[in-house]
Image (cartoon, rainbow, N blue to C red; front, side, top):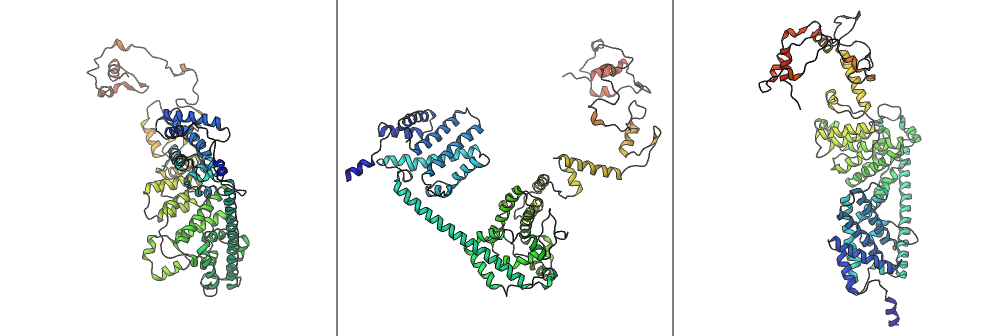
Length: 573
């Protein structure tokens, strides 16, 4: 029996002996491109002998080393190299985890985790396959990490007497047994998740019923001061929900963000007396929760209040908002943004609050989810806000920037807000002087700036100055000044309504296309060399010192001395 067992473990290999194997392994992991090419040629010969039975790890190693050789050759640009590295990393991740898959598909991250493959390698593979291509630097780093993993899990293990890695040498029976066990674990986990989801919905529905019963279903007739305090009557349901959130906090938030809970239906809003036409709270660009609807959920949210819950709650809200930005669901988008705004306002540290009385502070905190300021993950919130553009993004971004523990420079904040305003097509209100200093990014903003300038100029028009061609016209101060300067000249200010956009620069209405139209009637020619002047003795001031007698009513007439002075000021280049 032992002999048969030992014969069964024997494998036919493609290399000549152990020395050839060691040499190829050493060449593959050297930094010399020539040696690496030699190793790749040997592996190509082995693959020809193996046919379709080439070890997966050997094939992946060759692909990754080939990427490094081509990278060092500097014959490919960065984009081609990213595609090359990406294809090799995708093949590695898929081929190595393929044997771990059973009849039921399992998460690639879980399979990679079982094999000690870093999770960011799986994320890199996901980006190459489904998202924007990663940077070349990240691809090179991924290649180095994967080659190191192959060195430890495959190449080094061959030196110990021919033993192969666990993920490759495992028998079919062991694979099937492990696969069955993993399938059972997954089925149990899914069943537990389904039951937890069902319990979460039942608890939240019970809370809603208790709230409606406590208020007699007449929310629209109740004032804020008469809103009942449900903590005493609903302590049992609030306690159950809090206990449930200890183990299934993330699932509870996901259920809360479903329609009918924190995202109200039209029927729920109607029963609570919330009218979307009420300008006091409904504003798409500055989302705000209806006061009655907020007070409806305050007891539950105050019970669940904790730093971990608030962090997770904001993370889920921004993730939902990012999905909604592509689906264009205005109703869900509005209330998701409104809940984010409410949480940020609870954490606000405005200077106005520093001088309020105890009674004012108590009244303000009465309708707040939490009272004490928390240290939020500001950079994460800022990135999440910018990745979820919607009508209320400008408002949310402003809240984040104002409340940051270490605020960004004021100029950076203004640029972020302006870019966000352009992207979301919402107006960012700032002082007039600052608006004029902002650069123009779109035709709409240019048009708005022109209209604003026109309104300002109309308000500052001067009184009629004079009659021009038989009509009274209103002139601005600048135009009047121009007219005075041009008095007695051949030039004059144009008052005709001319569409100048139809004329190229240098052309006026009525001008002929013939070049001869630019020539004057009487002129004479003179060669520059006829009047030699010493260039060294010339100064720029000589040019400006033209005789005053040269100006006449018909224009400018130049004498020979004037021309000499002009020539001295010429600089040939």
